[in-house]
Image 1 (spheres, rainbow, N blue to C red):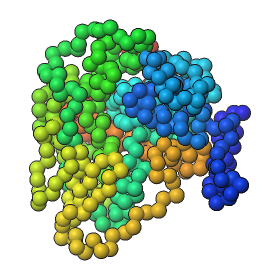
Image 2 (image 1 turned 90 degrees about the vertical axis):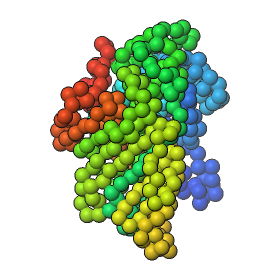
Image 3 (image 1 turned 45 degrees about the vertical axis):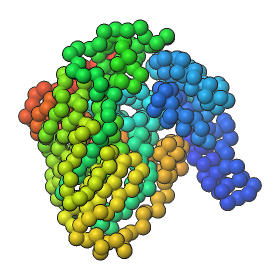
Image 4 (image 1 turned 120 degrees about the vertical axis):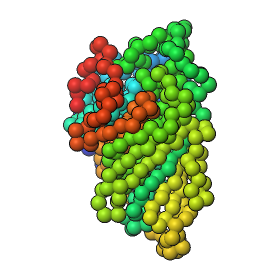
Length: 454
């Protein structure tokens, strides 16, 4: 059965399952095993394992492949999933997996370091495979640009893993904008004030010396398109996020969970100015210990004046208190002309905490929109893959421009300089080095092909 026929059958099966909820004879709502989406889990530990297990347990999937650069991680995941992954083949190289099983895989989850998102997603999409990519979408501005184009070119369903974008907080924000509760926003203060893995490292003067790798590790595939330094535990597992070569710091980690609805429903697109207001302990190799970065956005039509997002990261680098507003250590305050809102991250809803219209709107807030799509991120993705949900809530067309805002912020953090960005030409106009960082390092020899697939 080819993929197209399988997806048509799956779409029908999902429709039958919906009827099953009210039809006793189909009460189980299960899709026949041979009608399920063939799933590959790429990255089997930490967040990769979390999103992978969610996909494996979904009734629409059957796991056919597990891929991790440390095969023991894949074996551990397989054991944890018990019978649900019994027949899954294990690989340490996504290229070999797709070469052997590409025509049999329908969907994949990608939960690997930031720098490795791009080549895996591009190859999968080019093979007609639907992809779920954990946030941030990619490692550079250009990679986001290419992934957005590839999503359109290959016609596959794509989801970035900012899970709150399928929750009630998205529906609330969308409804409040539509009904005029949120309007004339001129300033947002957002923060991430928790400690980061790289904070205890001190002043890094060079890349760390090589250490013994975990048994069986495929370090060449781990490095992927990025520069390949000798293995060190300061890169893996989990520590890659703090290095410019591999991660996107606090922006990549928390930005997609904090500013997603603001960016989407206030129609922000890309800023014209990015200001490095404060850099705490700058470094040539790892992200600073704290930063304040301001993004200035132009006017976007009625009730959407020019506005600024002020981002604060670092344990003690908190937004200034204004009118007694208390912002969570990970969250935001939204200031409009006559209302002030406070919210957290992920699925946390907004609260109105001040402003001239506070009493007026309190008794007449619109009810959250009723959505025909899922309010579970993985469920939404898998149903979109079979055609029963029309779209992915955080498709690359939505999450790509959001991620590009953070990529611009990462450049400002790295250089500690103010940047001017031209949204039409997609160029930084006042800093040659910053403009080159839109692309980042040239891909390593042998890894150039992925940039030609869009």
